[in-house]
Image (cartoon, rainbow, N blue to C red; front, side):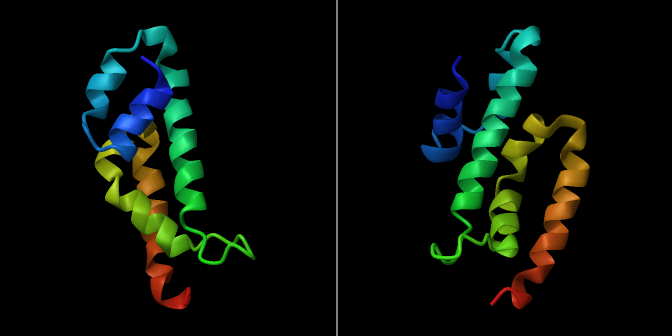
Length: 101
């Protein structure tokens, strides 16, 4: 299973949302690379989609956090035991929503 294909199916096409099933289908020795590849691409794409002004390239932290929080169910299996701290940080960023305008 190619991480790029899984990323497209889950995050772009929305044909499926069972990240745990995809991860379970990957041989144990390859899972860490698989999960990190998908996670890196998700963070990159989400960050690029959270830029309000292309001229400055500055990421809007509350927009980024909001997008990440919407995909919490899909991202949790990718993050593993880091998920709690990751989403807590995003919740804190999302509180800046009123200050980012």
